Image (cartoon, rainbow, N blue to C red):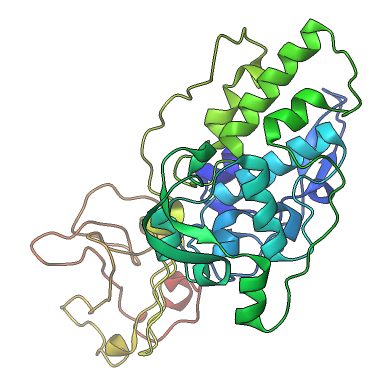
Length: 346
């Protein structure tokens, strides 16, 4: 998961069925994540209806722009399920899933997320600047209250589906501490392990995707490392990064210009398709960031000298208003998406 996040890859369907034990010659307990059929890149999300319902993150339910953080939510659901033997949020509908989240976790998504999410009105009612008692862990107030079943029925003309509860309707920490819910007296070492597990899940099942732990941060938790637990875990801060999809965005415009970087060649828009051979001026190219686009260097290799590039669509920064890309004679025709200019060069 650390590798996926570093690559800006969102799995979009993490669940127990997609995690395999794959023993190797080196270890008998290797783990492999499979089924990337729904995967996408950060900044290039395509679908809004993703993730299996039991493992669906709050931001996906609410229609908020999502990142690799949704996989960490799914991972938290899986970890809890492995311990209690049952899905943590087995809702019969999205309303039911969200209602269980609020009940078990004792909070709700932050107001800024609810203000910007497109599906908020399906689940929440705006009640003013502050509504006490339903903030995170019943702390600070919020301007939103979750709709009751009657209110949903009044809006949608049908009552939301609600599933059966297969375990006590308690907060997450109590569910973990009292499992298997038969008043079994636990040894002290087991109690200590459960305290670790609850603290670990706290960072994974965080409503705010910006505060949810990343794979790297989670990997340093004492529940994973085995180090002594001295109190609530505070993860190390990570160096801000630009995901691949943000640093190298795909830009599609009606004029026919397609851009696909990250190693592929620039796709010349319609404004460039009639340039005469040996044209001394650089072609016009739409761009979204303050750097130029193209394959990384001569024939796909990286060229560090910015501004002047002598190969087939090499990489360079913008200098004095000029884009650091040159196309060689003979490669002025339109190219199909993902094609390399070297194909069209004698």
